[in-house]
Amino acid sequence: MRLTDPVAEVAFAAFHRRLDAASPAPLALALSGGGDSLALLHLACAWARKGGRPVLALTLDHRLNPDSADWTRFAADAARAAGAQWRGLSWDGPKPSTGLPAAARAVRHALIAEAAREAGAGVVLFGHTADDVAEAALMRATDVPDLGTLREWSPSPAWPEGRGVFLLRPLLGISRGALRGWLQARKLDWLEDPANEDQRFARARARTALSTAHPGESRDPGVFFGERAGFRKNLGPGFRRVERDLGGEAVVGPDGSISIPRQAIVHADPEAARRFLAAALLCASGGVRPPRTVALDRLLARLAAEETVTATLAGSRVVAEGETVRFGREAGRKGLESRALDPGRMQVWDGRFEVQADAPGLTLRSLAGFAARLSKTDRAALTAIAAAFRPALPVLSDDAGSVALPGPLGSGAGRIRALAGGRLAAACGLIAQESALSPAKLEAGHGAEAAVILS
Image (cartoon, rainbow, N blue to C red; front, side):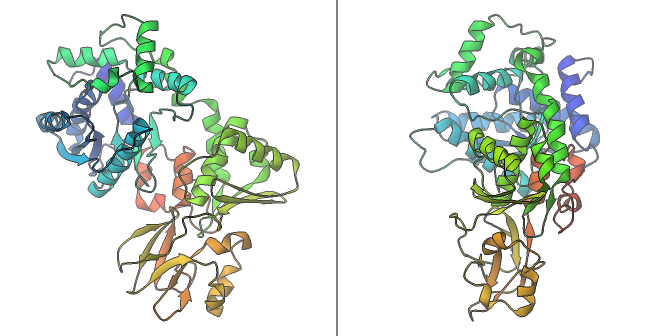
């Protein structure tokens, strides 16, 4: 593939910026069979071939169209013809009667992230284009105000399925027409999903509105319109630098709580402060639904005006005393269910911890109501943890009724690893390349005094 090709130049530059060419891990790719993902498939395979990296194409059949099985076969054949491995996924079971696009998007991210993790891939490629950026901006302004912003490099939005998985969108500066022109020049066919023209859906309405406002977009592969789509803004606005600074000042304890100097938040750019607060709240609570902007602004105002602040938001408890703001799990929120553990099998509990039992017959539950059963040693260990966050701590109980804190918190026959540090670092843009996704670096930030910076 000639690097004088402008499409290949853009894609390869993103690969070099973000990926580790020498990594033996497979490079996962979301392949629908549409023009955008098909072009990305051929570009990724050409780049990966130079370093001998395998490419794993993942195709999800949503079971929403009678022709979906044919589309899946088309994608499988296309992947193998390009030199990639292929795996099919499916969304089985009943579908929601409302909110179908959002539900389908969430399922897609979760299933693809799970498949990537199982294959040992830390990065999934997506074929979003400059048109998608423009359409998403219009959707946020009209139909879907809480729709996320597309970025070249970002953590998977699926949680906890996507923990440790990043998304790379190397085609955000290229128009959809340019990619189809690129495919046509190589005599490559692609699929067209009729849902893209179905005006019942916000995406199709945005696409129609933009095509009407900008008719006759050239299909020349050299045509790019990243500026019109807001691509440059999405790659790295100034507040992202401030957000990284905030993330770098945060400290994550082994109990998954997050601490940061109050002044760092109060004096930060308001947009960066909101984004950091939203990330810290979700990371500390293990949740997935960020708070509304009005609630974040209310909390920011209290942190700036009040000496002592105690609040709950997005499942997290916020305690600000003196010069420090701390975020931890709100024990009263639902979700702290007990879970029987299989020895030697890693499981996720409450979206906050990976846990592995070292003995049979153990159940993981929250500490609330069981503190009196802890040993003297484990009770002493609790003194290092803020009292407000202790009830939501995980403890191990056995059939005899004994209770212990899992290691490294206490003496229990099992170990936990808090996920908040890696998740917060990812959300704040502190993980900029695939090389920072090594297990050693992802575990940084979990010690009582360790800063979150991972790269």
